[in-house]
Each structure stands twice: as structure tokens, then as C-alpha cells.
Picture 1 (cartoon, rainbow, N blue to C red):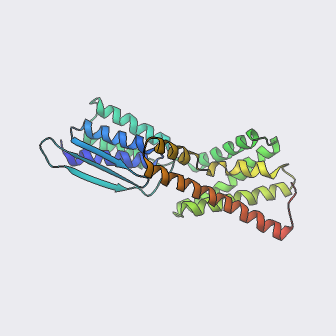
Picture 2: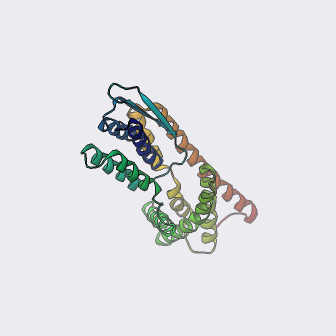
Length: 257
């Protein structure tokens, strides 16, 4: 058993999980289990919001440490589930280290959901949120339209690797602009429900939940960083919405609500 491959396997699993939205404790636990399953002693794993570390030594050998910086983070629970399943297969001896590395590389290379699925998913979710928060059926329909159209520029910005905070600011502004246009065309009754519903896919709910779980688990550094990131996203969305609303009112003198 090559200890370098064992460390590489642990790092790759942690990278996939962290970049897919897993909380710190889950990443560290999975990495540690993989290291122990591979027969390494004095195994340790450490995960922050942007980096992962793995260390271990073969019996009677020298300790080996590897680290990996994780820049891109999102939400893909399917990949997390696949990594968990693979780690269980490794623990049960159903798969070897080299085969596990190959399987993780395949998981990492899997493309995200198709664009139409992301567009429709955001639109349907926004429509349901608008209705759930008290909006009328026309408000729900308009939230569907606003969210669908809002996601189009966001996908283009994501393709060009634009910073996440800027994407959220533009997304909030686009949602507000589309909602204002729809309201002034007489297609909705309450602009509040349309805007709130349409920006729901942008809100950092998973990040905030993971931040709280990290803090409760004692991972204060990761938890604090995730909370800060969630607040920055929320501020960016609010800035985009507020800027468009102010510009609209200064140009057109108000809106029909």
C-alpha cells in the first residue's frame, strides 16, 4: 500500500465534499476514516472553509502531510452522497485505493446540473416561496418569470468566473428590475412578494446552516468564516435590489404597488 496514494485519496475526497457544500465536521470525519482504512497510523485531518490538510504515516514509517486549497465552493449534495458511499465501500474492503482514486476523479469531473434544470429549478422554487410567503397566484407566476430570467445572466457570469459577491449583487438587481417591469405592466399585485420570491435561490441558506453546525461542533474558525461569507452574500443581494429600486424611482418617480 502506497501511503502517498492513501493521502491523495483522502485529500481528493475532502476537496470534493468541501467544494460541494459539506460541513467541516463531515469532511474531516470522512478524510480521517479513509486514512485509517488505508492502514495509516497517527492519522489527522483538518478542514477550514478554504483548505484541507491530511497527515498520516505507514506503520514504522515517516509521517506524510498534504494540503489542498479549495477555491470553488457550491452546493452539490449528489457528489457528497457519492463520496460517502465510496468511503463506506472502502471501509468494507469492496474497493481498492487506486480504484477509489479513479472513482473520485470521475465524481469530481461530473458536470453540474444542466442549464435548463437550474433555470427551471430556481423558477419553480421562487414561485413556491412567493406563494408560501403570502403572495397571490399572479405574484407567484411573476416570481417564476423573474427568477427564470434572472438566472440567465448569472450563468453567463459564472462561465466567466466572475466573483460570487458580484454575481449575487447583479442577480439581486436583475430580480428587482424584472419585478418592477412586470408590476408596471399590470401583471402582478405586490412587488414585495415577487422580489422576495425571486431572490430566494440566491440566499446563502446552506452556508449559514453549515456555519452554525460548525460552531456547535467547535470548528470556530470555519464557522465564523462561513457566517461572514453568508452575510456578505446577503449584503450583496440587498445592495443590488436597493440600487435598482432607487434608480427606478429616481427616473420614473415611483412604482405601482
